Length: 365
Ligand code: SAH
Image (cartoon, rainbow, N blue to C red; front, side):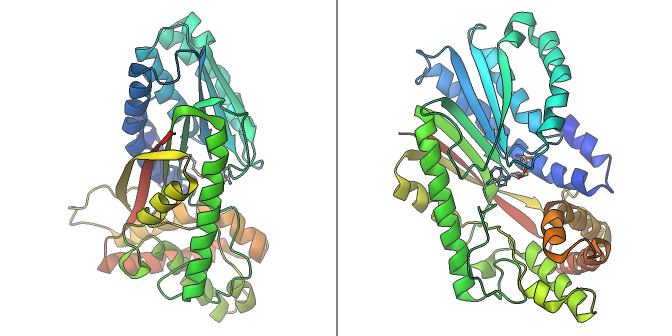
């Protein structure tokens, strides 16, 4: 299945929040896939660290369990098939948190393997191995020098935790109006998390092995010029609306924060330099409309109300488990995201806003 056909499949369920979210993630990931192909191509052509190896070992970190999960695997297998000797074994390790629905991925594997057999023949398909490792990517996941290529998309903006001792009343992460010390606390948490991530991967990846990471980021150092966090500022405002209508407790809103940080690209570069294990080969910035189903910036018939609902569905699928855990089962998510959809629609009337993503390519020194 190619990227476009999966995207179309998702768009068919416009009302479905999970489909809306995975189509945005699909767009983000599909932007990185040509880079993945180029890098793997380069690794094989220059035969970096591969000549001694009987298998090419890949990990996809933060793989989730949805229509996008096997997309990377498909692309990588296809690229390698067209490049290598057909006897090379390919090991793909899918990683996500323990609560990820690995079973639903594994139940699709028999038909995935059948398709491999049809497309590439029995022998090559027998040499492709897919497995799962549940754990946080902020921990060690793999044996030393066991991986050639690591990919992660739409995941590393999720921090290991909300920064400790945060006083961020009325906000739910960093936004234009939050206190400077809140901004610093999130920035420091990202520094520690990303540094830890690089440090663990540096043990696990062979010299000259590569890593391609795509995550939410910022193209400006200050928050005033950037819209990345505004999606969540509007959610904070919606929760405050709910509190003023007595639908949730203000104390609960004041103590709710999400572990999300979209770093400025120079911050990311600085951490890579400080950690010292990787050479930064490339950093690319891409932007997508907030509404994952809005592709046409020149469309004069832009429907803000529809887009507000699409964005609300998307953000609901990401934040629902956190909201339910914090506010309890009784919170009316329907009400929260109705208010939110209106706030997003009002904002989009004035500005067709975009989410910024960073894609970075790293080579293990
Ligand atoms: N890579 C997929 C899914 C992205 S959704 C895509 O691009 O479409 C983000 C995923 O990251 C979620 O499944 C979430 O569980 C996972 N994730 C977040 N923090 C993580 C961590 N510390 N370790 C492993 N996975 C994590």
